[in-house]
Image (tube, rainbow over all chains, first blue to last red; front, side, top):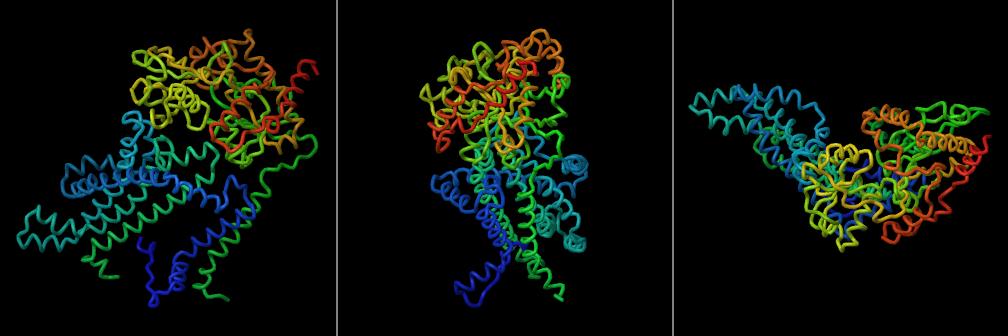
Length: 270
Length: 349
């Protein structure tokens, strides 16, 4: 995950060096952009199917100037983040509970075994019927999609906590509650974070898919409506926005992880 | 020889090079079937749901005089007209079905070169007109009562969407300021309405008549209240395909007219209903009272679309600023094939 964001430090902060560093870090993306422009300029592919880069950038500009970009992005982000944070709040306690309390494991184990591989988006029509076409149904779907990886990672992380640390703490008279909070939970944090980092893009993808299928504003719905009006440039513009959004989300996750786990041995290794 | 480490650095450039070559090949060699003399032309035709006739064509092979001879028909089901725009652009189908709003978008926004070639479904008095219904017990007596409420449509960007916008505009209501519109899959429209998730829903004929069996719904307004007469959907074909395979298309049109007239012949009603039931897996009792009768959508027995209605639709779409210029109906239609097919059929050749 950390490899996604490579921070290259340059001794000389000149603009040329900054550009050089950006090129080194993102040359594959820049190559794809150059290829896109080449394809568009030479009309190698039907411009309806792959609109030229400048047309897409023009649409982006129009989206920003008209405010649509911020409104639709805000709606999508709000739903994705709401679903994401609620799923963390629900899933981490369940994961820890499953490793510590037999009844909780007995109850949730079959649900997770069956639910994890199932495509949650398939439940969208039913969820819309139960909860309506707006935010609620989409956030619920995001919670469903994000919960499983977080529960599994939390459960496995808690199980794999170093037994010697637990025994040492118990030998020093630490009670169960304090043991969970002071030893098990901190040691499990890296694995919990693994689950959270997996869940973050899942949340965004789920929300966008739900918007595409069920409408109700947001970038996904905007893409679908643009497609209906044969405005492929607007579709691609929304895709670019989603790509940037996803990238920023992952970058934020990496930074939060580094910050929260500065004390952990994985941070010491860096 | 490059070291193994250095070879991997070349990978993006190699990938880019072969991507460009691959795209050029795909674009250049996209479906152009080299036909030897006498081989039937493969025609991939998109078909719609409901009682649109073209979807039943392969179920009555005895009526298809030219299938497997001058053309080889492949039917592809599509649930929405707008979904066919990229497919037509990618040349994955040769004949699609669009309404005038989708066609305007495809031609003006998408730059597609397609022509109207035949009728599929019309809105004509006294035949069925697509309905917008509310619960019988609801307080809504006219569209103005839907202020602040939610209206369900099958898809944004199609005629059902614009019917709502236009009729609400007549009552001084603007979307999204004064009311809400949501996309609802047509088969779930009834459930959403009865469950109170939407206040008004758009119903096609087959879904409406099924819902009527349970009762409790009432039509508030129809498509005809806005666009009268109306052309719902029509068959369109890629211009390039028409140029290459006009004769095969005339034969297809002749068979389509023959099948349309057969299905709408009251003498064949029972068999037509049986075939519709077989195709859609919906019981015959759900089709029998209304399908292929005056309670159904109008289909021209000559498969000729209502060009006046289409032209009005194109003009409306442009005047409401969905496209930058109106579609030139003369440039984007070619009814010569269906007219020739009709004359041939009636002359008995």
